[in-house]
Amino acid sequence: MSDPERYTTETGSSGTGHFESGSSESGSSESGSSESGYFGELAAALRAGGMAEREVTVTVTDLTAYLAETGSPAEEEFGPVKEFAARLAGGGGGDSDSGGPEEPEATAETWKWTTDIYNDRRLLNVYGDQGWEVERLDAFGRFVCRRTVGAALRWEYRREELVNRKRDAVESELAPDGWEPCGQWAYYLYVKRPKAASAGPAATVATGPGTPRWSVYFGKKTRALLTVSVVSMVVLAFLYGSGAVEFNLAIAIPIAVAAGIAARSGVRKDVVDGTEDEATGRG
Image (cartoon, rainbow, N blue to C red; front, side, top):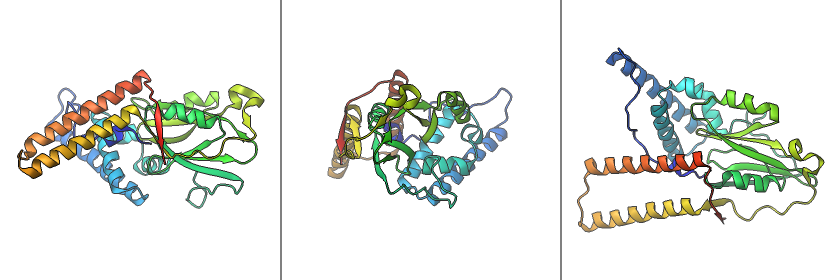
């Protein structure tokens, strides 16, 4: 999924860690070393799972910044490294006994698509109503969907933010109402259930629309953010190349960090407020 937060390159937050009263510097150092080791193992596991180097870097950076905000130990917050890496790289499900993704049935259509955080819930439910079931999220954050040819079930979806919440606890809370996990990206958990749980027999679609034309959907907010970012980089590159400005790393890094934190905060506020946007598809 194309979440603006995911492309934020943060190298820190407003604080450098949580310190309990009376803690020694050596204790803090040991804790920092432990977290560094956890993310080092996570990065290696993600690469081994086939995730692109850029995605690995951005994912680990985002999670490191998130952990700095919560102050929780990495393994307590995310779980064992191998299991967490498997969820990030493969969507946390859909593997067969042989260790690979389960092959779709011959009578099933498949489709992969992605969107931003402003359109995910709306589009998931639009396509779920057409019979598309999300099986997992792949290493690139795309929803991997299938639809049974003939009489497909209608599906409904919701998104849960795992900030200061344990995934197991969230799943247990939602399970009595028929919700089951279908993928996770960073601290966003997506769950699904057949619409029969709320609509009864009407929750089937005999002949749904064809496979959607587009595979990427960005809303106005995301397009504006990407446009501003690209234009800013082009202008800075031109000014630097022409000698109009002198590149100063000591100034550039704080500006980049501040911009990243501001973007992250803005997106987080939009998520909390439930802000949505109108997406435009791309092939």
